[in-house]
Amino acid sequence: MKMRESRVLKKLRAGEVVSCLKVNFGDGQVSELAAMAGFDCLWVDREHLAQDWSVVATHVWAAKAHNTDVMVRVPRGSYSDYVKPLELDAAGIMVPHCMGVEDARNVIKMTRFHPLGMRAIDGGNADGLYTNLDFNEYLQQANQQRFVVLQIEDPEPLDELDEIAALDGVDMLFFGPGDFSQAIGAPGEWNHPKLVAARKRVAEVCRKHGKFAATTGSIDRLEEFVSMGYQFVSVGADVVGMSAYCHGLVSRFNKETTTTQPVQGGYK
Image (cartoon, one colour):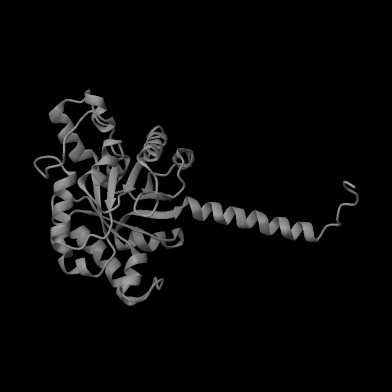
């Protein structure tokens, strides 16, 4: 038996660009809908959201039913916080605020099996096919078919970016413009020279060391990001789409009801 192959890694290794949607809503139906639409990856967030593990499991089940990967952004914490999504059969995890090479090494140690790391072994969960996957095959396939992403969203790790990207066990570096803009004292200035330079450098260093570059941004800038070398781009979020849809409906409703004659009569 084999572990489910990662759609994201298959496309990245083939030189293709991966589409991603951020999921904030705590219901697997959202993930199923997005997966049915054709996204390669869904980014489920536990750094900023209070989704418990049972909710994360529903996202994973719903997405992989349509061969879509789930990447869980974990909160910074113990090794259990990092490996739990993988045991639920998420295809990858994203660790926020990697602050340097030693920080990256510690993440690898906790999230990769031998010989890359010392991840705690169970094998009785969804990723190990509930013990139906051979023990040694489980370790090997998990290292090959599950991805670890480190977020670069602070100026501090830039000095050690080459060393971080050179580490075995890291698949992707994800440039986070939001927190980076705040860290350089220019919150929300997406075209600030320091932010632009950092974004370009992350892509260049990934390419140099054979790793994949990831980021988030408007789909209107997708071509720009791809030309920089980014192969993984998160282009939207469920809350953004739902907000725009609701605002659009209400705006049209209010416009149309103010231009029509009021209904006469009613209850007395």
